[in-house]
Length: 122
Image (cartoon, rainbow, N blue to C red; front, side, top):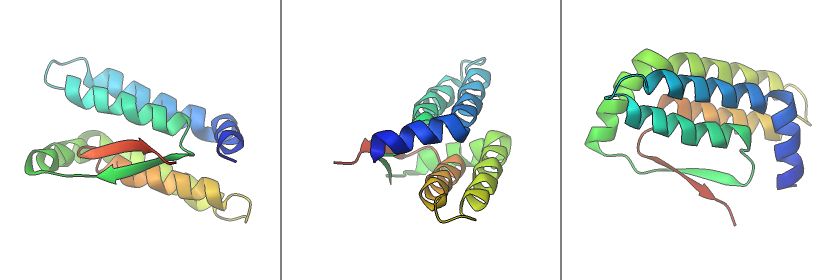
């Protein structure tokens, strides 16, 4: 189910979501200070392309909280709103509920991406 879910997700919206994370990462990497934020965006872009079979574990610290606040003000809210809106639309049908759950996972990650680890589910 993971492989099939990832393929369907990629075709019907995962590509656009992953590209948006990738572009956000490119914009952050323009400055030297923003490179760590851009690298995290690239990791999340991979998750946005293929979210099934992966989980997000939050291990926050004081420094990650400060970076999360800066991220939220500059880039986090637009990405979170897009993922939240798509999650609501996907959950309208029963077939779309698993895809909506993945979109909600990405919306939460768009609000707090730092201090988060992406792990493979076994």
